[in-house]
Image (cartoon, rainbow, N blue to C red; front, side, top):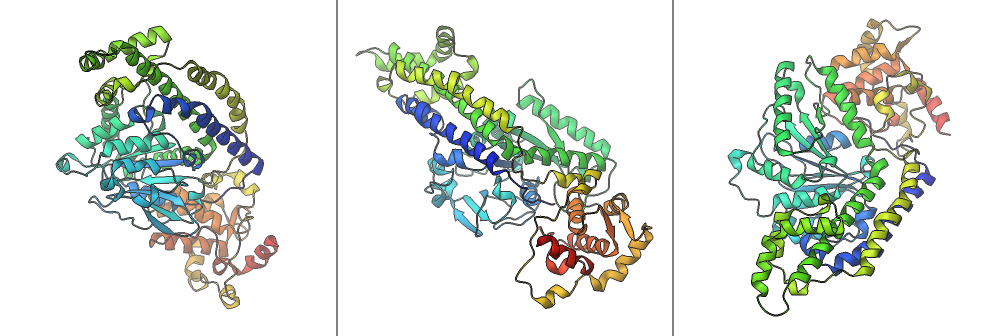
Length: 542
């Protein structure tokens, strides 16, 4: 897969940072004082910190074991990472955050919770049992400059449901679900099973369905008839769990960098791949919108919470029968919710889950609760009605501008005519450490006679093959379209939309290396540049 950094507009980036800074100021100035006054963090999520506004968009990858979660992450960043293992058995037993870093390294969970620059400080509430199974891998990867990934342990099947993790797995998932920008839920087309732990994990995602994308993975390993049956079964099962009027988006594919098996629905897999990559690619573009949406959602919950706490405080007796009154109020909480809705016109959707709230209230001292403070509520109303509204026009303007992407948008359209109008190697830099001898040698030369035979069998026109002819031959390798597009972009050194015999030899050499399990270079190394292109490439850089 080709993943490269796009040119970014400094002014646009400054606008994004300005919106983020405004959201941060609004939270600390208007919302945080109310959260502290009504002890919001005792009932709901902890307060936000600077890192949660400043961090890059995050993608949570989850699913049952052996559905291809770790392989999916490696497919996106096209790089292996420390501690990753793949296999049919449960191989990933910890939460791994993949983030950008100048130097590759692994930070253990306990150290992460005391780092103010990382958005994980509040995870210490889950205890050492969880923190010993949580780590952050930092890598100098270009994709991770724009987005971070959270790889999760495989969800246990029914056969393993008696095993204990030692920490509240659904609660950890919900903590991440609240803070990430996208949730990728993977299923295996071969073993579609809904276990108890998977059902509990679904419960943790309730309220965040807008972030959820479902992937039916390894779909090239089943025929079209089986795929239709599996897809229908998955949609039926998801409909029972997520009770929403909207149908969840399910992507069908085989998301890894190895050759796919030829099947009747091969073209469908390519189209689904493009759609999913486009969705992930737009995350940095939509990060400011997501943060604003989460802030508004939190502010509405804080408002409902303040009314609940105030009502309970007013109903408590001054001296006698405090305990019995407390239990009676907890029992009547659904009725209290309705009264608050009618009296203060608070929408029903803003209230927390009633059962969870009842459980939290059992351990609280109602005498320490506080009644409504007009100045704080006025500040909250100003946040929801005026302050947020002032930021919306700026967000709308940002959506029209060019922001840095993750997965190269042009990369999936490499074979399209408009691709030929650009210079795909303008930003590439050569390896200055290469010796002159290494630079003069072309490693593809010794294989070129074999590659030339394929080249001339494809009937070149005036010594060159068109993009359509090359694509037709490339697709016979069964590698994903994204990988082939990267090979094309590396091989079409002069950017004319055609390949001569040297460029074609380079393309075949890269494909053979990929089929042998090697990662493709992100930029074309000097020793791979065809001899006839070296002079022109060097002059372009100057």
